[in-house]
Length: 329
Image (cartoon, rainbow, N blue to C red; front, side, top):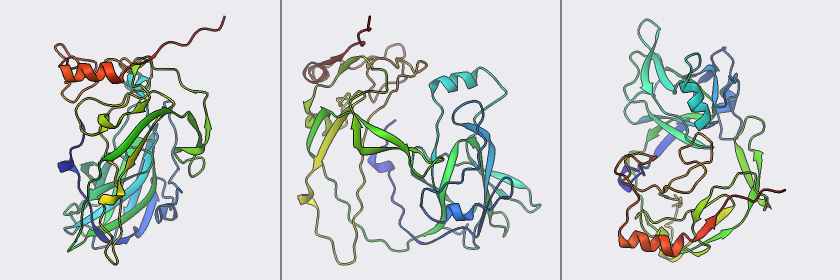
């Protein structure tokens, strides 16, 4: 489900410091890779036969004595090389291999590792996870172990503390203009070298698509600002090669006070579907998702809403019909 504004939380932290030591499951020192956000990743992973799956691997961090106090957090920055729908189907049909979500473990009084539960994973190509450390250590031992068989590459680890007093101002900017148009496909490369995530050179673009088309009624090119003004199940339907250029009016921003800085967050609400052959309806735009849908594909009784406003949206905006490419004889 989409994240609502009330679910968002800002972490104002101070005294960021790296771990005292960091090792992999083989005892290798990986502290240098974790000290800075520099696209140097802990990369001693052994791939299995399926993309996104590796031999189980550990990240063992020794934290300082302040870790575990109320208001202390472990920040882990990195990326995940994901599996896909077809791989997930293959994994479900056998028992020899499985994907193990990252868990965090600490040492008990006997020196044995005990789990403190799953911590999720960096859901994307350059994400920061925040793990609350308050009260997780049963002894004075400040080692933690992150264990998984997913292809997670860590770039930076640090311990932080919540700021005691924070003064902030939040200003919401609504889009002032939004135009949908065709752009093409940016050249892909590996950011950070062999073990970095696939990234895109925006200045190097081609019109030739590397992807199979997703057929159906996409949103017509031109002004699409009304579709971005609220979360109302009326959205831009984009297909490979499309670009939406959105502008915001900075006049609503207050002048910065002396010593202040400004950070921008882009909040978006939408869905994505690839054309993997094992993705439900992966080769077509339809059926359209909507916020109240109970499952996808639709469960019995589910259907895209048919009220007049949504029907008008379909007629006015989703008129760019993408068909199957012609076969060359």
